[in-house]
Length: 277
Image (cartoon, rainbow, N blue to C red; front, side, top):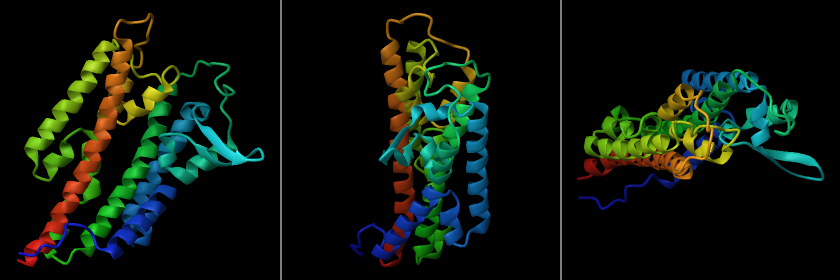
């Protein structure tokens, strides 16, 4: 049996790195370089429509939660998380528009603010997962075994786990691990929401916690929409614990998504060593 390490070749890693870089810069660009024009158009349109719609619905108040980095009064990079996963477009918006709340000093009633925040966050996350999907295409292309090309794209496995915890592992045949991770992450998230009286999601009041909560993916976005009317009217006994739990669940969901990508990639690489037996 071959003792070859289950790791992409140096040339494959270099191609993955460049593909990821271009995909984060402009979602779909990495796919375009791989001659995947259909996927390139899909990711580009999806991310830009979400970003434009999100900024418009929230009256560009997302810009109150970013930080400029520059010299001599000139901004070079505008850090806005999670929107910067769609990097170049976010930089353009940061230079073209200002928040109507002038840095949050003048809170304004904006009817569609919460939906706008969710949409722009989706744009950033999908920008990152477009990079993962493009990297998965490179991994499958580099495999010499024909069976590897029929396996789940690692980027798809990662995205499935992100949208619903454990789903990516289930898709790749790791059903026990999928159920274990999904149950653990969802339990932590639901308990956190209960401790916060279902009012945990609030970018205006808890902007740092909100970023982590958005990492819950589809379940977090849906929960944020459904619980929009819930607000803190007093300091709850376990309010901070609730915020911490929901945020931690989001970060664990990212870790699970990365693991789903890695496991799917290992499945592809394992076909190479199997063929050498």
